[in-house]
Image (cartoon, rainbow, N blue to C red; front, side):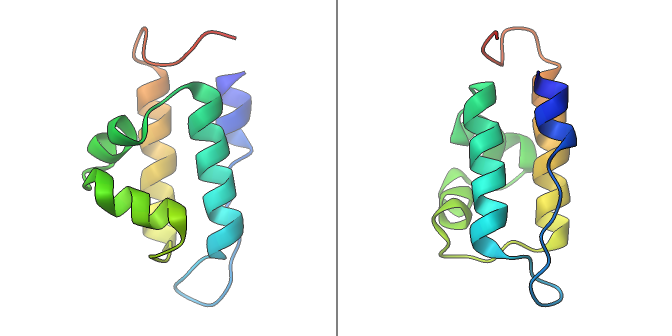
Length: 88
């Protein structure tokens, strides 16, 4: 289930170098929540502050392709930690 969620994450381009913020945010948040990963845990794994991730998720900051790839990689790493994700 988690692998399927992660494999379906794909960037939605808007204008280079930014992604379509609304669609990108919906993807990241829905996968993060479906996996049961907290915003704080994802932010820490991404190497950014929780308030910064919160700003990305609320649309106050724009997603770049690099940030999207970082979030996707961080979600993959977190999914491999026993007990980190909720069971389906």
